[in-house]
Amino acid sequence: MQVEREVEFTAPPEEVWAALTEAERLEEWFANDVELDLRPGGAGIFRWANGEERRAVVEDVRPEERFAIRWEDEGEVVFTIEPTEWGTRVRIVESSPEWTTALELHALAWVPAR
Image (cartoon, rainbow, N blue to C red; front, side, top):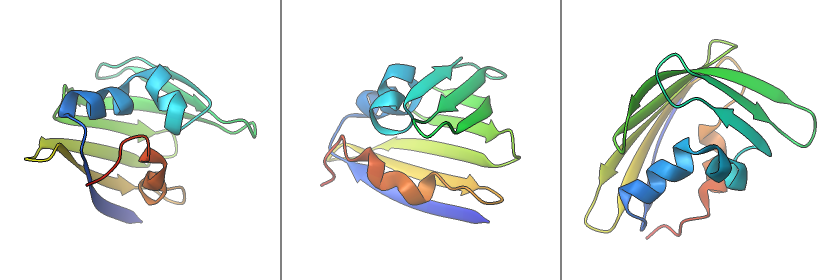
């Protein structure tokens, strides 16, 4: 399964990048507990209050441009960040056998869309 989506935020690219790549910011909107080594080959661990835990490997890091991780279940999420006149556009492409973050992007409500 593959999901593609574009979302526009009124926040600048550096703010959106931080929300996608800093563990403490990810804990604000995505998972309850996050460990993330932000470099290619780095490990990511995401834990939720219901006891679920998912592990990932960082595939690509281009600050304020592109961030990609591969889930342990073979799924992959790629975020591409592009500045716009009003803020930032994020393109999300996720391939996954069953679980999709992209479908849950409403969680990014921490930044109002224009």
